[in-house]
Amino acid sequence: MATATHTVTAADSRGVPLFIQTVTSREIDDVCQQLRTEYRPALGEALRISVEPIRRPH
Image (cartoon, rainbow, N blue to C red; front, side, top):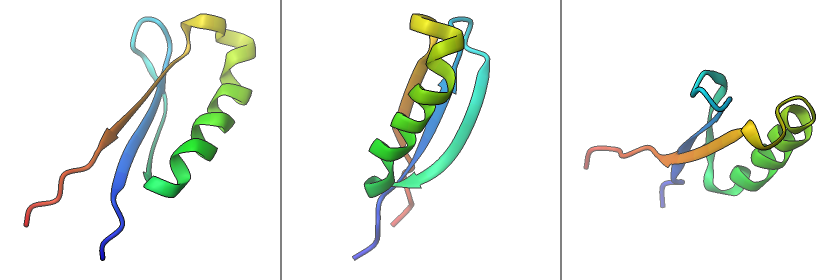
C-alpha cells in the first residue's frame, strides 16, 4: 500500500511562505510541532501552518 504524502507549508500572516516540505502522513505531527517551536516565538499568532494532501493520478 502506498504511503500518502502531504505538503506542509508555514507562512506569515501575509501568506509569505517560510517553509515548504513534502512529508508522509506519519511525519505531519512532528513537522508541525517543529515549525511551531521554530517560528511561533517570532511570529506569535501570525504563524499559519497548512497541510495539503498530494493527489497522485491513478
